[in-house]
Amino acid sequence: MANLLVTGGAGFIGVNFVRYWRRSFPQDAVVVLDALTYAGNAASLDGVTEIHFEKGDIRDYDLVVRLLDERAIDTVVHFAAESHVDRSIRGPDAFIDTNVVGTHVLLKAAKAVWLDRGTGRPHRFHHVSTDEVFGSLASDDPAFSETTRYQPNSPYSASKAASDHLVHAYHHTYGLQVTTSNCSNNYGPYQFPEKLIPLFIINALLGKPLPIYGDGGNVRDWLHVEDHCRGIERILHVGRVGECYNIGGGEELPNLAVIDRICTTLDDIFAVRPDLAKQFPSAPAATGKPSAGLKSYVADRKGHDRRYAIDHAKIQRELGYEPLHDFSRGLHETVQWYLDHEPWWRSVMDGSYRDWLAKNYAF
Image 1 (cartoon, rainbow, N blue to C red):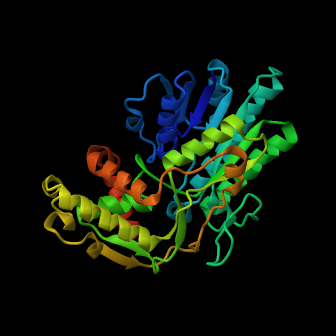
Image 2: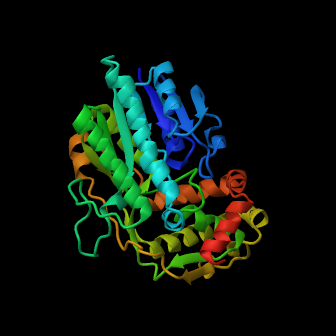
């Protein structure tokens, strides 16, 4: 039996991980620590039983130490992060505070409880990072591997790169038992609608423009969030201490292709579900029009990385990881989830968020 502390466990990837872990390992104890900022939603954990939820900030050293002590935590899975590149360009301070300072506080607390007091308790600090720390690839470059040189190009990716280095330093210098994973673009249920897939699903349902940066040719590797959770499970159970592992989905697609698939998927579902026309009357698909008619090209993001691609051969070879979701099926299930969970996404899209979208996406 393990005792897990999941930071950011009310956010997109964190909540999917908590749900996955409770299903897969019901004998383990799970503590969720989340500050419930705009992207964290406690309602996303509704129906998840036998967890302890603690509202709090990862920068609160005393709180983290108390949780590690009182809950006899032996495993930290660290998701908590500011993660939206656009927000980091307009306001980088929060990214440094949360992603760098917050990670350092967690590491200090883990060192104090697990190492400095000499308990000898076996432990693991798993740090969840991103492929964006590696920078941008040309169309013919090989995919990112664990030995690719770091070259972050946005305040977000720079803050994640810094936190990666801190985790490595605490292992090398103090002997903290750590692992790190660098993942590609996640998609799936409970994703806050500022990222491409949920944003475009919801905009299409509301009849709003689908804002495409530049020429839409930026390429990303797409990873279903449940496959990401499975990859982290493998790392926690059989990954080598001190190692980094790339977790990819093996689905490298340009943004425009992803957007076209979202539109086609919505149109196909509306065609066989006439009840949706009443539920979403502003959607083009409600009157038989193509959702793609909402596509709108906008000025490109500053410093927009052209291509990311993940080589996950190491985790495949060493830990037996394979992604199980192909993108077509995973996208269809994701679109269906947002159609079936309108109360959830309306509840997280408050007035301030709609104002932010209008300002930053030129609706």
